[in-house]
Every structure is written in C-alpha cells, then in structure tokens.
Length: 414
Image (cartoon, rainbow, N blue to C red; front, side, top):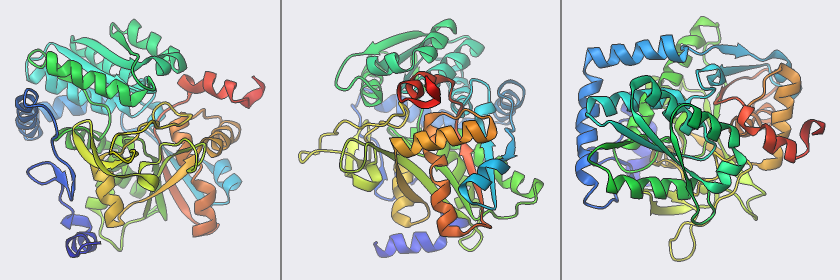
C-alpha cells in the first residue's frame, strides 16, 4: 500500500472524495474509448453535473422514486434467518420490493431522465440477468423513449422471463452470439452499437463500471439505498450495525449501499462492510471473482481488476447467477478494496444455492441468486462477529427470474 493510499484510508469519512477530474478512483477508472465516443461522454458529464444542481430535476427524480418505484424500500428484521445462521439480528434492505423487483430501477429512471434532458429519443442497455433490461425498458416506456436491450444468447436462454417482460414493455431485445454469449459480450456489443448511433442514442449503463462518468453516475443514482439505510438505522433503533453486506458483480447495488456509509461515517463509526463476489465452481475452477483472482487491466473503457490471460485479454467468467458472471469489477470497488475500506469475499454457486433455500424456507422470501451470494456471508459473519452481532444486508432483487435455474440445480423437488 502506497503512502497516499494509507493517507486516503486513514481519512475515510469526509476525506474520501472520488473520482478525480479525469474519472480515476486512485489508479482505477478513466476513459479508454474511441475518439468518436469522447464528445458524448463529455456531454454526459456536463449534463449530469448540471442536473445534480437543478432543483426541478432532483424533485422529478425524487418524486418518481417515491410514487413510481415505491421508495423508501423497507428495512425488514428477518428473525428466523438470524436464528438459523447464528446472529443476533439480520436486517434486510428490501430492494426486491422496488418496482420491477430489484435496485436497477433507481439508476434507469435517473439515466432515462438524463437522456430526455439531452434530447436523445432512443436508449440502449446491456443486461445479463435481464433485470437491468426490464428496468431500462420500464423507464423508457414511462418517459416515451425508444429502447433496445443487448443480451447474450445464453443469458436469453437462462432468463427467458425477463426477456419476455422487456418485449412486453416495448423494448427490442438484441441477441449477442459472440464469445460466451453472456454479460461481458453484451457490454461489448452495446458499446460498439453506441459508437454507431451516438448522435441520437443514450447508453443506459447498468452497473458501476465503464468509462467515466458512468461509474459516478450509477453510484449517485444508486446511493439512495445507502442514504435510506443511514436514516433507517436510527428509525429502527439499530444504531451502528456490526456489518453491512451486499453482492458484487460490476457492483451497482453494493456501491449504492457502501458509498454513503463510507463518506457519511468516520473510521471509528463505520460497520464492517463486506461484498460477496462470485466464486462459481471454486477459485481453482470457473468463477467470476475478479478481486480474489484478478489483476489490474483495461476492459470496456475503464481500468480495474480483471480476470485475464497472460496477454491481458479478459477470460470467461462463470457464476450460477447471470448478473455476476462478469470478468471485472467497478473501479470504485477496486479502490475501496485497496484502501481496506470494504472487504470482498468469494462465494461459490453451491453456497449461494444453500442461502437461497434458507431464505425461502425461513422467511418466505425468494431472493435473486445475486442476492443469495450476499446471504451466504451470514454464517461466516456469525463465526467472526459472534452470536450477538447485528448484520444489515442489501437484498438486491427477487428471484422470480431464477426459478428455472434453481429448479435445474435440483432445489425444491423440481
């Protein structure tokens, strides 16, 4: 750890200010894109900065979050789950109860408002689990925008329900046949298409990654999760919990959870922050654990930790969760990892399935497989923190979309 990194880590709280003017979070982030896209990114940054100081924009965004999305989402005490995993209390931030069934809608509403502000009549998006595709199609329908969603054909097979929902909402779903035909290829195809239609098309990027300013844009729109949590800690008499955890693929629900806590609380006040990344079949097999096994590199317009070969080319990631099988992670997560402000732990497919079933049977809540990775952290935290510990977990989405995958895995007698 460099002297500067030690200094940043010691500051925490109000001293944590990222990204810099060039879009870097420490050494991560930036813009690695063709020159044809640079004007669009610069315009987006200007419009976004202006929108954040425009009371009319903020009022419209806030009203839609409240009256359309259904915010604030509840913080629910899962008593039977806490007893099952050996913790004093487990509180679930119920993003699964937001309109469309996941946190993704927070960001798509914000970005589609930006598209209208920029006079772009058409939006495009990438998706893996299909949830961001549904959320983008939803926001586009609400705001009268044309919409196309790029999705790997393997994910189209795995997530047929969300594909159908997107089409019902008026979106064109564009199959991507390259490579592993999953999320990474969908991002590549969307970026490629955007370079061809940048004049009339806005790219609604779904996770906290990509070229600057997208990681910051997504973080700001998703930070409603963490801001609500800070208020709900007091409302529910929790004080400061012992730990807060969330699943991490690219990292949008996790950065929305963690960022307000990192910036709003000092080092001695902050709970332990833990992100769960996809260990797939195990770290010696196929997985998507870019922080555990990756190295810094450039992909999709930004620098971060990536799973890559000896030549620096991204390699195929794997997870039972279509939303976590991405070979990289958002640049701010990479920086938080290096600073030691957030701890990231790999969780296997098998562990996620056990946690999935535990929440179904114990609380009557069917979680997304992405969220199940975070749920799998709970028994570990019980051992580490003790049987009186209080843990808050962002339940990023519901599991309707994953029922066929879980049935194929043999759960529930299917």
